[in-house]
Image 1 (cartoon, one colour):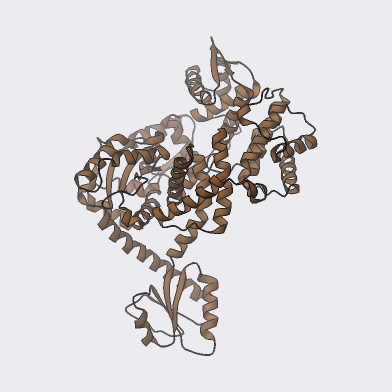
Image 2 (tube, rainbow, N blue to C red):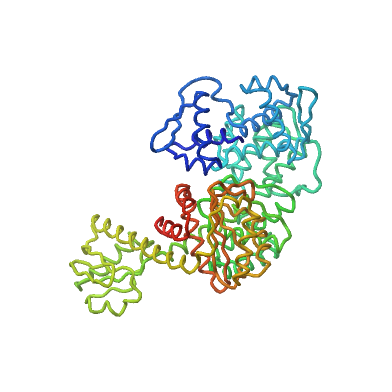
Length: 621
């Protein structure tokens, strides 16, 4: 996609004002280029306002048919592929240009990209003069269609509306109800991902079948049992829909069902011994690396089921799409990072390749357990001082538990302020009830014993302020121990990931922080999944093997080419001592929370000195 198209798409999808600096970083352009593109877009009748706040796109109410056509190169590529598959026809270059309201040269460039895209699925794009056509099997074309629809829904859950938009001739709601009812009769629970994935594949099969396209051969490596649940459900659906599918079609749909089912009722008795042992190993591995306890019955049960199907999918080379993987990575970097190290361990043990979509599903499984433990860690230790009168302390405790159980942990209830001194090393917050007593040694908040709405309001404010203060103090201390002036570079000549890795590895090696294998470890982690989060990268090794825990900061205001075609402007490389793994988790948590905000990145890359960078970073908390 061209820079101008990216800029327009970014403004269209994000209402509100955006500074030139933000747009430059987000799109990967200079501020001057952004301003030039804005002028060009305005000349093309795009309404873009400008003010001291930046730029804002105003959507048009025009009913021009062109509004429904693809605007960006990426959208045109998907449109062309979809058009060629669904119409099963040879297309003419000039007809396409007229249909898309673009020049012939633009369509030619789009067709080059189409060629690269379809080749990933084993499909050829053939040219005969000005005529173009696709050559490939029906199975390959369906796989490509499925991928396109998932890509178009990127960033949101695949849902019934998206499927209906792609197949307007089908009654998707009716089909979804049929699928749900059949699974309910079989006492099988489908989660949202599984149901919509099965719905999408049935919609594709029905649509293609209506056009006279059926899969005409069985892939021996993808065959399912005639007595399995997959074929049983497919046959029930065919009967209700009054359609005829070929045997290979039925096999393919049954395979989708059987590789999707990750629920207890269907596979509890068939989880392999290999999977059970692997889950135990992964739980221990995550504990050693992150000190996160996943050893609960609920996690083991659910994740064992998922992992068993993941291994089967991988060995059958069945792709599982996860449109929210990127969102999980961006919004919950620590959870995603934990999923990456688990995926690496699974790959090592099973010799299978795990892609970003599968990593995203692993993150969904471990997210709840991690979130619960992170919440517990952030609780404040509280001592309550309250006059003794009947059961007033017990009533107040029950009310506090009801309103603040996720935020505080009551260490002790005392009736005499003199007793407070015995807990001075374990108090974050002192709650003084029914009096104006304030202890100068502690953060104190005074409330009534009735915990009225006003009390809840001021207590919430005090808790949030104290948590923020604790985070800031802790983070500042960690930064001073973790970074140094010698490990800070702001240089426009550092333009590639290889340059960054060489500089960081060489510097860390000379300082006795790591050995010479560190650069290989950085590349190993990068191959698993890009360490870029938006416009920032936080590279590190999978194994914590450093002799000291240290960080290295690299800034290039013009951008650095990173893995997976990312462009980053700030790199924070981490080396972790295995005896100090908690420091990695804490620093990674805080850094990722700060730098996933594009406005924060804009401010940080303007820092020319180490002192300025650290001060700005701490102020952002």
